[in-house]
Length: 637
Image 1 (cartoon, rainbow, N blue to C red):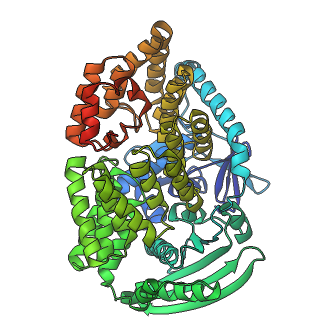
Image 2 (cartoon, rainbow, N blue to C red; image 1 turned 120 degrees about the vertical axis):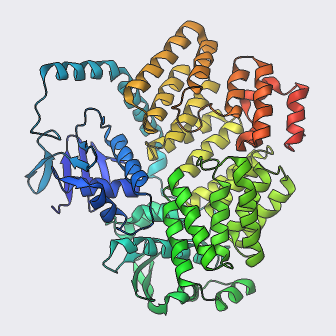
Image 3 (cartoon, rainbow, N blue to C red; image 1 turned 60 degrees about the vertical axis):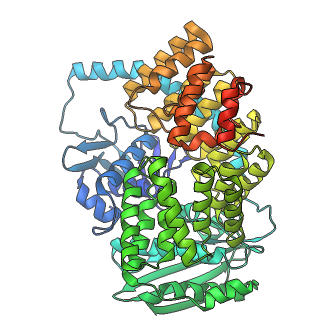
């Protein structure tokens, strides 16, 4: 069934705009979950097997973790629709088989739900009573969530409507996702990878005069039927590059056109046909053509690099592009698969510098994705980054990864600064280099104004990145600018309502301003967004509320300590040794706090670099033991 708009209850799926709306307001859903939602909703009442879903969304032979990818996408769909898997209104799990979306009828060429997920199964009166009891039990939680979202919408709406005007005076360009013309969905990873590599290539052309929107924000428009004028307005860009990729056998054909936003004129168009081994050279040729048309000036170093692009091993290049795809899942399994693909690329081509740089990036963030501990991952990241730099010193991402290791593991602050500055010199258009320079170097050293400037540069380059938007709120918190932190957190939650970390960070912020009721509500939202069962979330919320009402802030923190010891907690909850040190400090238990910090130091917990600016540790700052830890981490003044 192919239709432009699908309606169910107060939701509306718009294929043309590629978006989900509730009561006319856009519900932000990531690309893969939204694509799956369209697939399910366009096949109402029909069982779609996991195999069918995998082939449709990722391609049957694509290098992806099927179980985790599908499970994650389904969980995010349910979060967006607020659909309880135990009593689903829309999406039913068929155990061991797949999923079925609710049945529809066509009304004025639009679709509306007219029945529950399974019309053939009658519900007993007792079951209905139990459902109603559950709804009554949970309504205070959902009412609170609704109130907070409304407040967030009111605060953030003026920010969201404002055009993203660059502060740097640069021309801005977006590379729209290349269209896969192969006729084979499993080749999507190739088109997506070429898009990302083109973004990197263009970003290094003339960074003083050209800014290039990052991949996260660019890929928001994959499959969207928005016109270029609308996209240009949303991103605040001057130029758009549209393209298509066709890969047949060992040959790659790319067709691209450059569009000027202000009058929608086509500035340039071209087609390039190359052997796959010359795919990287193809990207350089496109970049040079664009540079000529918009009168960019390349440095001698850039000109040499573009003129002397060596061929790549075709199979190694494919493995590298597959690694980019699964890394974009931002899950533990995705990171593990990315490592495997990158190692395969390196085994095929031991001198493939990009693969080493990618491996360094994945390893450096492995403690965050829970793949490896810092003690296991960071030496591997250092080795891979160093090898990449030895092979090709011009790879900004390799310098960024090495800087991250030097800051968070070696506590080599001078070395970290040198690597970050080298990365930004090579590619000032790398949004994540600005992000990490801000939160892994400038903020820990108390250079808050510079850190905020860097994060705003990152947002200019990647406005639709949840981590970057969220980290600006955290940076304001470290600077003790709580009002601005609140405004930024509310804006982020409005833009990305399903981003669990942002709700958890807002909960933390509320504890600093004494708003424990609001903190409890945001904590519950973080747990729901992280996939915890709604009944369990309700119980935990009630326990926090009772503890706070009976014992004030101390009662609240005592209950937080109990919850931190349970297996289910949202990202950035107080579960690590560093997090527990914060809780102990809030309880006034200084000895336990210092012991936890010593444990975190021994484990090289990444957050140890934040202890110099973490407001919770203010009561410890005069303690000689805390000062000793600061010296060992290189943060003593």
